[in-house]
Length: 104
Image (tube, rainbow, N blue to C red):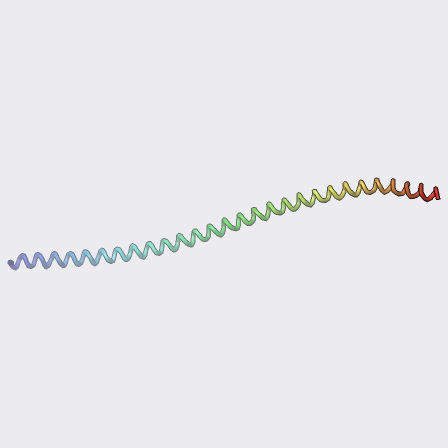
């Protein structure tokens, strides 16, 4: 093998090692970026999930408050109706008792 051929092979090997080293550095750089981007995406996703959970909880609380108010109003109406009926029957009961007392 001639000296020129040995030099050409040596230079080719050096270029190959340099390219391999550059490829390794680029791969490490890409890996570092991917990990950084993944962590950032995870933080954003966690924040969005927390915000969505807060909105969902607030909606559930509002719905529960509305339902409680509806039930309370319904209960008040039922009590008012019972009270009115009791008052009407109280008059009849008093008259009945007075009638019985007079008969004695």
